[in-house]
Length: 456
Image 1 (cartoon, one colour):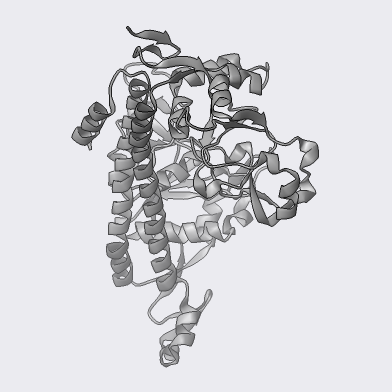
Image 2 (cartoon, rainbow, N blue to C red):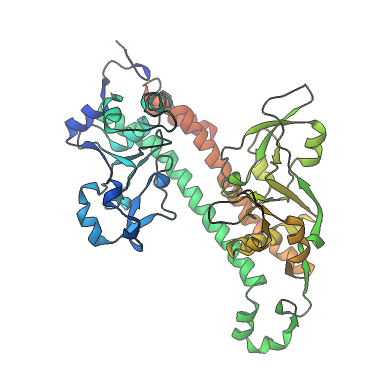
């Protein structure tokens, strides 16, 4: 006979308990990270043991980019807060439903201030299964409803200990965790492969169009093949120019409306500056659906070869000027057309064969902080003076055969990146759809594997 749980009906041989009871039975615990008085700003160093803060908690994984670190000697004073393989870490404030599973590579890192650590112990619950269970929409909703705080949600050990928990037999847990992990592993593999593909294309750009001096020094016989220019030595037959020389038109964005106001309005996905990293990694991100007029859409719908540049906002410590190259395979993933928000600008080029070269040039400038000098704004929001930038900032202009050769060489890399993104998007959608059904026992792993096989 089935039983009712926070997930709805579950198989009769699955147990209903609490997260606190699961941890106690396994010899684990739920505890807060160190207090702020135990970790001071002066304790952080550039090289040391990583400290996981709330900002490092991604969706079931720890984000190590820019992670804080402390000296190994200081870790000894806080060793009760060291993380182990299989721990689950939560933020105590703000986005309290987000959690991260600690993997073997992160064992020995420190649970930071503002976090909660869940240690499940042994032989009761498979940690990966628990991490997926805690990502179930009904479980996330329960956590949000029971968190305290009027202006900012707060989580504590008592709330997590009282969280209803469903415990299938260990074998079922292992099968469910292994299946869902296999999807996440493939998504992560695609992400890393995309980083490699992007790095390869960047390296080709730098070798061909930036490192002229090193090339000249490595091959002295080529010395006479270079000439002086306003940008220094450049190859004979090459010129200089500005971005405006290659632009057919620069189109402002349209934020549109949150809901259709009449039958002529069209649904679109609006690209903001915060969406650019997701699109660059060939991931869907969380672009909002907005509604704009058919006339505006005809002018602003993104096309293959367009460049989208962030002109307002910028990340903390970073400039505006982030850029993404729009490609057809990227657009094919979405049911709605893509347009820029009014925080970005669409740059439509005179030829699609210029797109890769100019994208990697803009990306190179952004990595060097070149856009700071073109920023203005007195309200605390940074704005890129795009027109001034496009008319003033010079670049080396290769001859058309070199541009065509670069486009032909890098396009397959970018297409592969987008194909990986399409696959990851499909897998993520399947994972999110199958997760609730697996965790409630509505379907079994073999059925889920069949569904994935048929779709992918």
